[in-house]
Length: 138
Image (tube, rainbow, N blue to C red):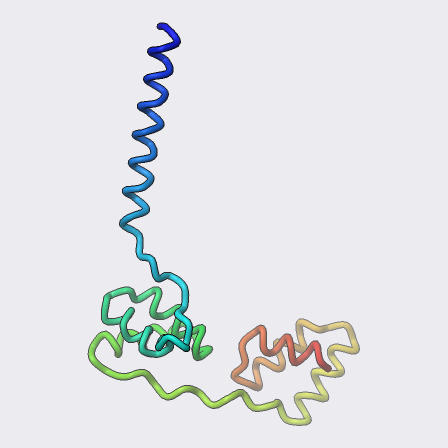
């Protein structure tokens, strides 16, 4: 096979590959990131995603906004799809009482930081990240 034929086959194959890639990319949704709240995003965006049938994205966005556990966020999105409304935002997490703080401090000083984080999470509604930040400040 001559070099000209090889080059033509290679160029044709590259062009075909580019066409397939661009067609596939054109079918993907463009708004996969959380919207800027200043542009009217937020809970309205969760509602829009839920009613558009984009449940996974709606659940993810709702969890980012509210800190709800996965099951509760999924149930809320299902309620939205059925025509309901979002649940009220949970109140901010309360600091653990003095007894929990003292126990967590003892655990940290004993080198059991993971146990301290678990203890704080058991006595609050905090996420893992929130409990870890709290324990880090002890």
